[in-house]
Image 1 (spheres, rainbow, N blue to C red):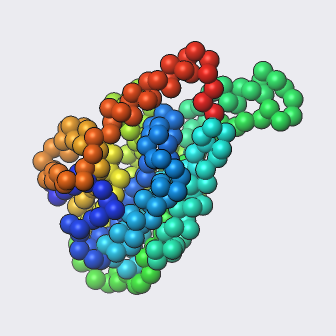
Image 2 (image 1 turned 30 degrees about the vertical axis):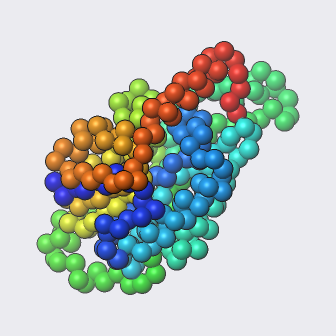
Length: 289
């Protein structure tokens, strides 16, 4: 298995040479999201600073003409909606990447029922009680300036990387809105962190990389990007700062090379405690909007 996982911060990807990565696919932590990363960052400015430092490393290691894809969405905390999507676009352009596409990942209509938030209008059917539930996230696609020379891809690799047109048509990959079922809370890996579905990763890896190329995920989580990249015949390297995810990564990626750096941390237990506290507050009727 051509998979390497570095436990340490992707603010410093010293293990990767300049222009060595063919595709970046990642989902940064959602700023202090109440049921995923509560209180992880001391401020929104600290969060954006982290993203900019990671973005600078992404721009360094990405090959010219190749893509970096970020799965993300704005986050509402304490009644304030933080413009993560807009800020990531600006930050990535600041570090030298060009904004190319925005794909909407829409969860099926049946995935979300009326919640306490959207149900406010049901309880009080009057203007100014409208608070919609969010059923989508965004895949922001950037490219590093420069030319990708397709002619240098060996013919056999080109054929192995052929996009299956039946799946392309059936799944409507050609649209800027992809309807993909989310990883449900009951599924195993969702208890660790916010996980995007393997189908989403498969589409991105197939559409933006060739077999044998190197895929990078600077916020690896439980390893979805590397699981899919490896299955599709790509090499993969992931960075994950939380040592408490090592067991899950080792189970999902048997045979992967695991490297532990001194800047790795232990985060999951503390986050779980805070999530449980918030769940207890929710069940007792306290608001978390």
